[in-house]
Amino acid sequence: MFTTGTEWTTAVTDLFNGVVTLIPLLWCLRQKPSTLRYILWAAAFGMLALMSISGFFIHGFAMSRALNDALWCVMYLLLMLMLSVYVIAIKYDIDGERGLRLFSRVNIAMAVIVSVLLGIMNYRFPDYSFVLFSIYGFGNLIYCIVRLVGQLRRRPGFRWYLAGIFIFIIGSILQSIKAIQFTIAGWPFNYNAIYHFMTLLFMFVQFKGVRVLGNEKAGGASL
Figure 1 (cartoon, rainbow, N blue to C red):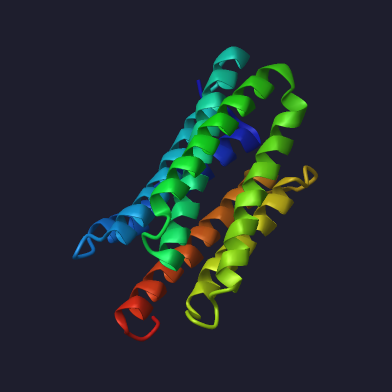
Figure 2 (cartoon, rainbow, N blue to C red):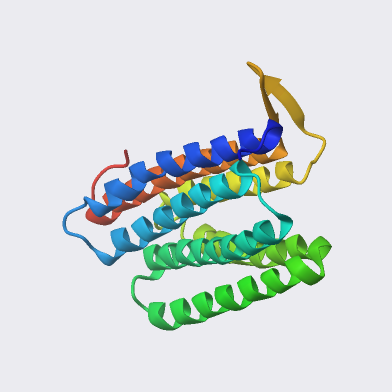
C-alpha cells in the first residue's frame, strides 16, 4: 500500500511541509482587520499546504502508472495556481489594488492553460513537461524579482521576499541534480527531499517578509 525508500521519505517531507505551512496560513487568517492583503497571503500559503499534502499521496501510496499520471495532472494545476496566487500577492504588496483585477484574471487564466498543457505533455511528451513548467515558473519569478528590486529603496522589507525567491531557485536547481542521495538515521533521502527542505526554508523566509511588510505598511518597526 505504501511506497518505500526515497519515495516514502519524499512523501513524509511533503506531509511535514504541508502541516508546518498551516502556521503562516492560520496567522494570516487571524489578522484583524482581515484585509485583502492577508486573504491573498493566506491563499498563497494555503495552496502551498494543499500542494504539499497532495504530494504526500502521490509519493506515499503505491498505485498504477495511469492513476499516478492522473494525479500529477491535478498536481500541475495546484502548482500553477499556487504560483499565480503567490505572484498576485506580491503584486498587491507593491501596487495595491491598482491593476490587480486584470492582472489576476490573466495570470490565473495562464496558469490553467499551462496546467492543461502540462497534463497533455505528461501523457504525450513526458520528457518535456518539466521544461515547460520551468520556463513558465521562472518567467513569473523573474517578474517578481524585477518588481521587487525596483521597490527596495522605498520598502526595504522586500528583501525578505527576494531572499525567499532565491532560496526557492536554489532548491529547484538542487532538485535537478539527480545524483544527490544520502541517508540520515536510516532514512534515505534524495534530490526531492532537498527540494522540500528548501521549500520549507523559502516558506519561513517568505512568512517573515509578510510580517515585516505588514509592519512597514503600518508604520511600525521590522520584526
